[in-house]
Length: 151
Image (tube, rainbow, N blue to C red; front, side, top):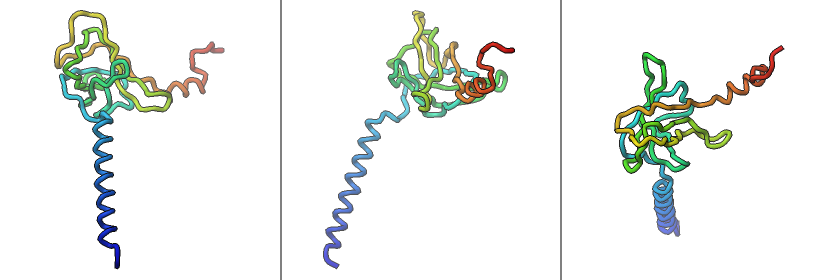
């Protein structure tokens, strides 16, 4: 069958170009875990947050969630965060579960505080704000429990 070697060579070139494109895309996408120091944050609800979720300050990725546990005493979600070594956070910083738009994915947003004392590796971020459940809000609204006057 004529052209078989040419077809094989052309197919190999396409595979090499596709692999190079995927490697470049992954390198530019900033999907990897951030190496740095660990902090801990406890939440009543951590819906949509999993290992690998971004931690952002002002929309810029500065860390990732590396581990999640359940506190057996308080039943709070315990998230372990890896924060870039170049980012220092004041002790009164706030960590909240945020959403990328109405139906987007979730991430942790950190709002830096104003204290001069900084969090050290292994310390806990004391001020947290849990995720707001869209389903709960819609349920309350549909059942008339959205804060309106009752009869």
